[in-house]
Image (cartoon, rainbow, N blue to C red; front, top):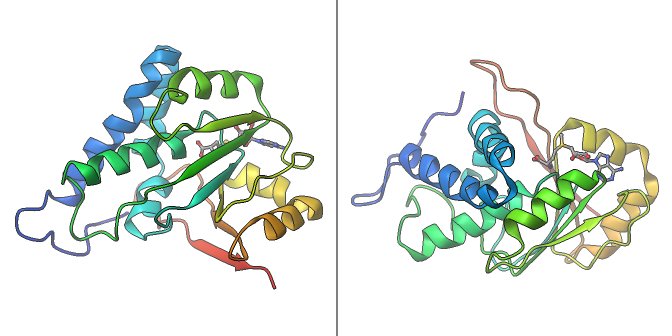
Length: 201
Ligand SMILES: C[S@@+](CC[C@H](N)C(=O)[O-])C[C@H]1O[C@@H](n2cnc3c(N)ncnc32)[C@H](O)[C@@H]1O
């Protein structure tokens, strides 16, 4: 289980409270895509430790062009926006690395319904996320600074596709092929998933 390892600086919000507020903020836009989409967003952000870990470990750099492969309904985009908003409002925990501030976001997703939900909920965000309905094994990847791949089934598809890895490696600058955070349904007391970064030569 994730515990707050570092004390918050004086005056900064406690990290648990900050995370709860971020979760709510990142779930709120999904109202526009219906109750189910919002409940799913809230449940996933609350139950899957990988999202908090991305922020707490500083896995999402500043001013990055982010490519989210197998993006589902675009939770990472919503979290990026919520993080930027929280930082601007002075509500970012001092104990965490700097808040991510994506300069661009592209999500690639196979399922039509997920893409529709992502667009309905998030297209109007200031981040202006772009959602592409495509198979990751065939899609043209945009130039990016960081490719994010979340969860096991996306990763297993990616691992099978040499072409997909090659596209990651050649489109990511500066040669950061992928930052993969594998997540599984968390169990009580389970360790956080590990994050890894691959660098193309
Ligand atoms: C378990 S979900 C994770 C969604 C999102 N990354 C998240 O963490 O909320 C995996 C996603 O990968 C998508 N996916 C699986 N194979 C894919 C492929 N070949 N191309 C694009 N997306 C794919 C699925 O449709 C699904 O939305």
